[in-house]
Length: 568
Image 1 (cartoon, one colour):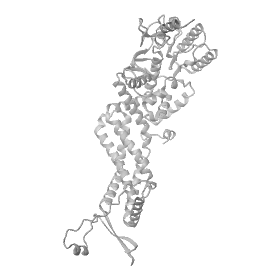
Image 2 (image 1 turned 60 degrees about the vertical axis):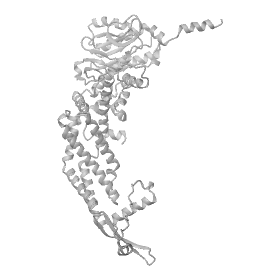
Image 3 (image 1 turned 90 degrees about the vertical axis):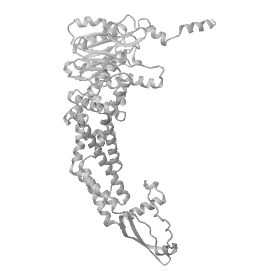
Image 4 (image 1 turned 30 degrees about the vertical axis):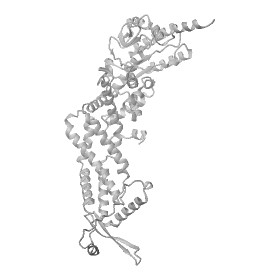
């Protein structure tokens, strides 16, 4: 089924939204938010996050990120479902297996059924419905065993749907009809006797069925045989085995096509008997359609969403980092307290890197961050390549996942919902003094300031670098003041350390609704080695650029050796 077709179908039981009203409201919200600057999807690399969680339905998760769900009831509904999948290990595998079987059975068999014209097609139809009944039995047995362990409303609804189907009179009748059909097919016809009329040249001129039996045909010695063998053991003779595995007609051999023809002819010849089979099979199909499981495939992407989330959590824990269920607070509280935060994108890249280069482990460093009345907007400074961008991105992903209703990459997390995540991440090729780029940046910030609120999150990464250093500092400080005057929470990662020193002056003005705080990335002061840890404090006098130059830059000793060898 195509993506857009799945999008238009509501699942048999919705594991994303507790009711139709909330689903419709969040779809309208997504449409409304589409008019706001949508750079956060790219800047936070949420498409990659979606791919990590749910590779086959990545596009669907991106749309959910675009909803920026602020409905605490919906968030809790999803969190509870996820925890059931975490706490009942067999749940995900059982449900996914059953859904996959039913989906493939529907698509490949049941939906393609027509009135059978041979015993082969009748048998295939019976097998298809048998598989469906077996799936229902497995789901019923699983729910009976694990019902007391299931806590979420969503998973209970899912099993409740299957239980309703299992107890439905149409399903009960279908099982009975199917059982009767199988018994009839198995016990009533095991052989048929065919009479062949021959002409004077022993050429067959006509044939027909003269009898059928519930026993296999055994060839007995004739009077001629008894006289010929005179009591000796009659030589064993068997009926030639014509059974073949059927494929598409294009792939059948001549013998198999003949068998197929014989099968259909036999079915037709026994019309008086087989019409009962056809009628019974029609009853079974009608009962199946009344039960209404035709659209079960529409829940497939939701199951993959939760299974992918569980696998991510287990994978992270196996690699020594924790993910947790966040406590999502009302947006009016405007606060957050996150411990052990890490960037999911870097984590995934490090995991892949370490698989390929085990001798050079890339470690994932965690950090803490708090947003409250003592600090709601942070100026993040420090050494180049010290992890500023990774930290900012990690925070944005944490916020997005929390409002998605998933676990977040942190040991513990209390976080207020936001109405939108605004980001400003200039690309490396856009950095440097450039008057046209500076004009573009100011227009971008104008667009942000027109719609941003005191319930928004703003993430800035090396913004305002397109003019002279002094002007950059002045403009950046004015922007910070504007956003903190509105009451925005956020982080500004920058090498413009003077802005951090202006924070006290801005805070003392009494005009701000968000207090500014300075944080820095730490380094080893002796070696300049990056520690990737964030702490509160004022910027240092150096960005440790010399350490970067020494590690990645020009080898001056080598230059001296080469110069000594040159002739001038």
